[in-house]
Image (cartoon, rainbow, N blue to C red):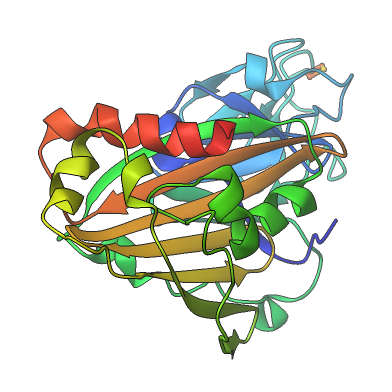
Length: 285
Ligand code: FES
């Protein structure tokens, strides 16, 4: 897997001061916040006897291993070994791996690689997340697949008429028109117009489509950023629907997608349940 990237390991709102474990890229990480509110990511393996720091607790700005009480600062350095006599120094090699951490777009990102800071790829620019016109819902979906397969699915327009026939495609008109791609430094995007299949549009959205005798094409924009993010932006008659998928590889056979959906229509909390249901329906399809 590609380690020299920023990886979105967890939603911001999930990570509190109580340490928690996240499994990703076949490794165990511990995520927690220090009293100043800053989020941190470290290896979930105490260097003493392999205790899980995620089962530990916070003491000031240190995370405490539950097995023998060793205390670690967020840079990974052990600063206290309770069994040692007062005048004994803590050995320099007593440290766990800690990872540069950024909190942005509602996610906790960790840089898991080993290249110097000046060479690290930046986070993608995702202006949707700072736009107050959007109503946001978030959730997770677990796939029994390697993450590359989940990524590919998010970008594959040709399957939409067959798998998601309705708002995002028409099985009677499945041709994909000519489209151009635009390259970013660490990703790319394409825009294509799909024909909706009006008779299959379910629920709340049906009312908005009803006005149109002949539904227009639905402009969709799909984008990808390394190492694991995709965007689907759909221009519907009632506004913009945007779905970001952050496909986190757990191991070779499991991916957890931590998704964020943003919409410019039906912005009351009352419509959140419907929005979540629609996203999960698409994933389940
Ligand atoms: Fe962590 Fe002993 S295993 S302190």
